[in-house]
Image (cartoon, rainbow, N blue to C red):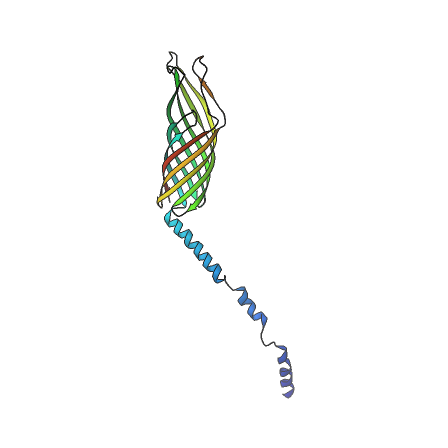
Length: 224
C-alpha cells in the first residue's frame, strides 16, 4: 500500500497548476469585441431606418415629362413611361418616350417640316444616397424613329429615319412615402448617327445635333 501511495504522490508534480489547453475552447468561442458589436448594431439600425423611409427593393414604375434637345436644335417637349427593378444599390429600367411634333422652317417661313420622335431604351443604374433622398446614376442606350413631314409644299411627303443614341442619366428622387417618390432627371445623350432633312431642292432644313440635353420631372412608384 505504501508503494502505491508513493507512486501516486510522485506523479502529482507532473500535473501543471493550471492547464493552458483548458482556456483554448474559451478563446475560440469568444465573440466580437464590444466596439465591433456596437458598430454592427448601428449599421443594422441605419439599414432598417432607411428601409422604413424608402423601399429599397421591388418593381419600379415611373411616368415623366421632359423638355430638351434631341433631334432638332432648340427646345422640344415630350414624356414617357418606364418599368424597372430595384434591389438595394442597383436598378435596371426599360423606358419608352416620345416627343410632341416640332416645326422647323426655311428663312422665309413658308416652307418647312414637322418632326416627331419616339424611342425605347434600356438603362442600368447605381443608386446612392440615404434616408428619403436617393440619386441613381445611370447609363444606357435607346433606339427609335424620327418622322419628318414636309409643310407648305404641294407634294409634301413623310420620311422616316432610324434613331439611336447612347446616354447618361443623373436622377434625384425625394421619397415622400416609402413607396412614392418625386423625380427630377437630367439626360446627356449622343446620337450614334446624324441625319440631314430637307424639303425638295431647297437644301438642308435640319441636321441632327451632335449631342442633346434633356431635363424632366416625374412620379415614381415602388411596388413590393
